[in-house]
Length: 109
Image 1 (tube, rainbow, N blue to C red):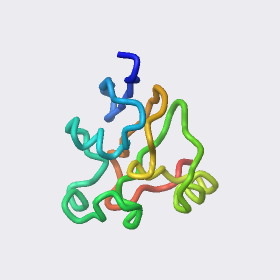
Image 2: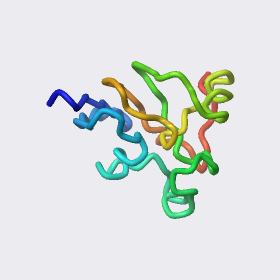
Image 3: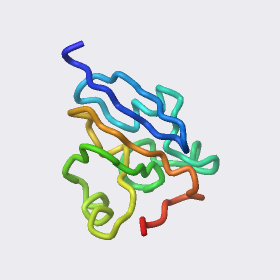
Image 4: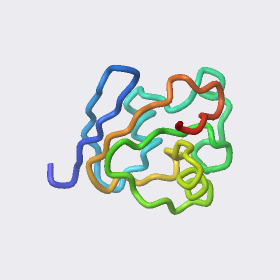
């Protein structure tokens, strides 16, 4: 559809494609699609998408939007993952879920 874009999500070596409405919240789209950005410890213990706990971080591989949240500005500057709860899907994107994080992710090296 014209009002949807393709979101490619890498989970380990598997690529999953989702068609999502433009303007969707990335965290909400992932959770609804069964692709949680959380770890098993933070799946139930998180801030519910308010940008407070920093546990829903994902790596943006393609078409990274400009950060608009203080955490995401720092994450981009220091090489950490971006908060999926603070990202609106405005165009086709490719992201990678951090399958190795315990609670928060580590910086990319």
